[in-house]
Length: 70
Image 1 (cartoon, rainbow, N blue to C red):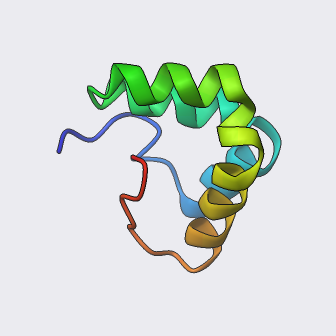
Image 2 (image 1 turned 180 degrees about the horizontal axis):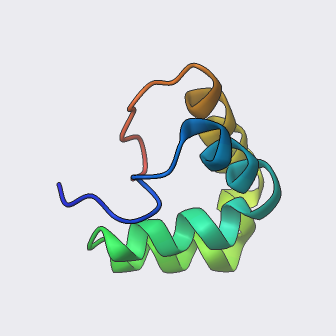
């Protein structure tokens, strides 16, 4: 899987981006990784109505590379 500029950031910066800008930042990250449909769904629904947002925060805090809905 191709690494994007968001992937190269320090984890604390990614955590802050996830907490405050997840639907846009992670939606764009999914689009840049080549998953256009999921990225657009992520942006339009606000991180899958908040559920995906919570999953992203938990995976970021646990520092796991879980590709669920990625």
